[in-house]
Amino acid sequence: MTITRTYLFILFSLFLSMNFAHAQSAKQKALEAERQQKLREIKQINALLFSNKKEQKSVITLIEDINYKISVRKNLIRITNEQANLLTREINSNQKEITSLRAQLQELKDDYAAMIVKSYKSKSEQSRIMFLLSSENFKQAYKRLQYLKQYTDYQKEQGEAIKAKTEELQELNIKLTQQKKDKQKLIEENRVAKRKLEDELKNREVLMASIKSDMSKFNAQIKKKRQEVRELDKEIDRLIKEAIAASNKKAGKKTSTGKFVLTPEARRLASNFESNKGKLGWPVSRGVIKGKFGRQRSLTDNTVTQNYKSIYIATEENAEVKSVFNGEVSGILVVKNGNPAVMIRHGNYLSVYMNMSKIYVKKGDKVTTGQAIGQVFTNRIKGETLLGFRIYKNDQVINPEPWLAKY
Picture (cartoon, rainbow, N blue to C red):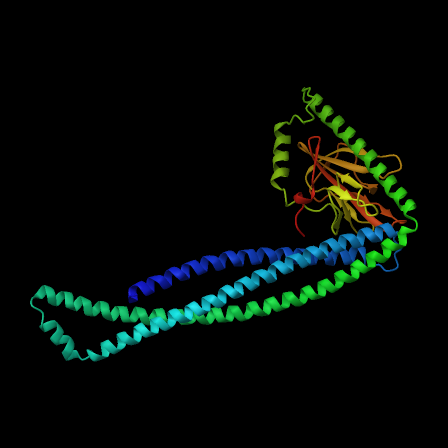
C-alpha cells in the first residue's frame, strides 16, 4: 500500500467511525433522558404516595400504589440495562478502534521514517543543485523543482497526520476510560434498583396474602368501582353528544356524525391544541399517572380486565386542578354517588377533569391555559387524592398521556 493510499484509507476509516460514534452517542443520550425521567417519576411516587407514614390507606390502594411503583422500577432497570449493554458495545468498538489507530499510527511512523532516511541521504544542498543541473532541459528542471517542493510539503503533511492520529488516539483512550467508569456506575445503580424491586415485590406478596381471606369483599368493592366508572362513562358520552348537537344547532348545521361543525375561530383553537400534543401542561402541579388508559387487569383476578377511558393522576391533598389549554367550559357534570367533573372545549377537542371536590368555574366561562378550575377530591377512606383526566376529539376518547409534557 502506497503512502497516499494509506492516508486516504485512514481518512475514510475516520469518517466511518465518526458517523458510528455519533449514532451511538445519540442513542445513549436518548436512553439517559428516559432513565432520568423514570428516576424523577419514582421520586414523585415516593413523595406523593409513600411519604406520609401516618396516613391510613386501604389495602387495595396500597397494592395499586406498590404495583405502579414496581412497573416504573422495572422500566428503570430495563432502560439502565440497555444503557450498560450499549456502553459495552461502544467500549468494544472503541477498543477495536484503538487497536486499528495504533496500527495506522505505526504505519504512518514507519513510512515517515523511511521518507526521512531517504531525505537525509540526499539532503545536501549540493545534491539538490546537482539533481536540478543534471536536467536535460528547462522543462525537466522545472518538473524536478516542483517534485522537490511537493516532496517537502508531503513530509510536512505526514508529520501533521502523525500528530493528529496521536491526539485522536489519546482522546479515544480518555473516552474509553470514562465509558468504563459510566458502565460500572450504571451496573451499581441497577444492583440497588433490583434490591429495592425485590423488597417491593415481597411487600406486595404480603399485602396480597392479607386480602385472600376476604377476597369476596374486595371483589365486591372492585365491582362497585367498575360500575361507577361505567355510569360516569355514559354520563360523559351523553353530555358530549348534547354539547356537539347544541354547538352545531347554534351554527345552523344539523349533523349526526358526532363531530363539531367548527367556526374559523374554533378551527384555529383546535389546530393550536393539536400542535401542542406532547407539550400540554399537567392538570395538577405535582402528580404521577397511577392509572393508565385502556385495558387493565384486575388486581385480584388476572382473568378480569377493565377498559379505562381516563388516566388517573395521584396528587397531593387540596391540589388545584388547572385547564391544560385555552377553551370554554362546556359543562359541569354531577354523577349520582360520585364527585363532579368539568368539561372544557378546545375547538373540536374536549378535556375532562373528574373527581373534583370544589369547582371554581361555571358553564360558558372562558378559561386560559393553566387557570385553576377547582380542587381534587381526597378520599379519606382509601387515603388517596386522585384526578381522572380525559381528552376527546369530537365524541371519540383518546389516550391523554401522550399529549402531556414530560416532567
